[in-house]
Image 1 (spheres, rainbow, N blue to C red):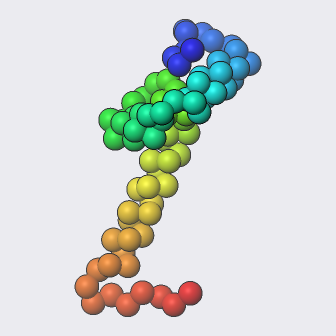
Image 2 (cartoon, one colour):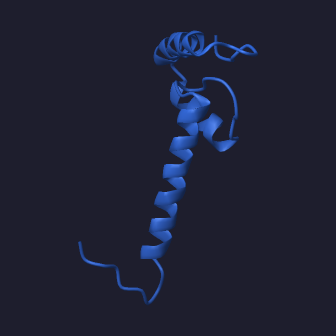
Length: 82
């Protein structure tokens, strides 16, 4: 349920992923599982209620946020007023 069989049709994949996410939603260690998958990073399967594609989005957002924080925290740099 958490990992795709080879050549899985799209409709079957979406159904399987939703079923796995329902299991994750009831799991007491969902947040820890998700963080593990993000830190590794796990390239396949549903971990912590997120698919591999969803984890890639989270990681990209985290990288952008880190870059923005680095830009605004440089010594001698004046942050633009919003």
